[in-house]
Image (cartoon, rainbow, N blue to C red; front, side, top):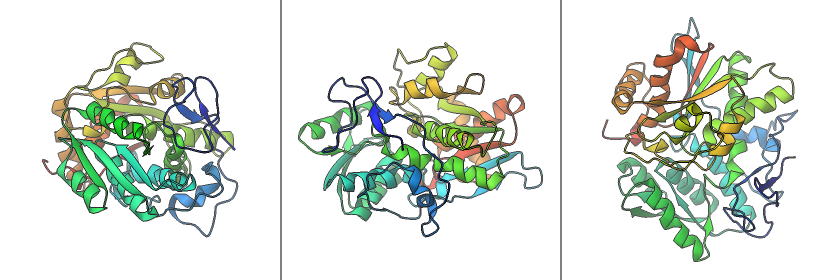
Length: 364
């Protein structure tokens, strides 16, 4: 079973406390191997928890379940089945984050955590608040002051303490570290890798829903856990012989904040310059993606790309999706804008990950 270790020095993750970076070298923690696709499903569990044996959870980790997973795959044209929408927007709190939060909170409980802090542009914070409430953990969530109102209300309704921080997304990340210095557990969806195997279940479900016939998967990229989890899920399927080839992968960022797209197109294996501009796609407004190195390394050679979408194209993409009955927030709409630009140059069928619900973004 894969273990969590520092990606730089190789030291294992502590058994007695939650830390978000390696205390020895400051490196990022990650799994030392791909998830292992289980040979048998847990027939007594539902949603993502059917795949519990692939999660690398501690033995005393409880199941924290709100209905995450088993989201629909809806085809734009059911007869042709060339472009499909994976509706992660229909998870319990309205985004794919629930797949990761379920595992994250499960692990926090296994470590005996009673109070935890998190920072987020909104979706991860709402998801974290919901699952903490479900698991009996008191949550405090730091968000940018300009985070969407519906997401902020979600966080508060779930009973978490909401801290709105002036300035861009990066300021909320700085503010949460002060709380961590006071001894609170940092339940970071970005730094802690606990939730990545949960996100990998998107790949397992897509394999089941398409009988393995997928040409391309397009997903928005902020810190990178969504695309990384999907890639690792398909890699696990390939390792067990379920699929012969992995899909082509397309990560999408907003042009105003596109550090990974810039690094990819320059042929770099890591980011060197952080750029944080304003964008309505707040879920990808991340100037220093935590999983940058892994994303740039794991997109298979000649089997993927990272692109950026001009700001002027994002809200129109929301409207175009809505005209198809898909109500998506701007971050999710990036994938539709990307598909319109490059659909003739990538393998079909094309699966678009609709990562978050349009109900979370009222200015539309």
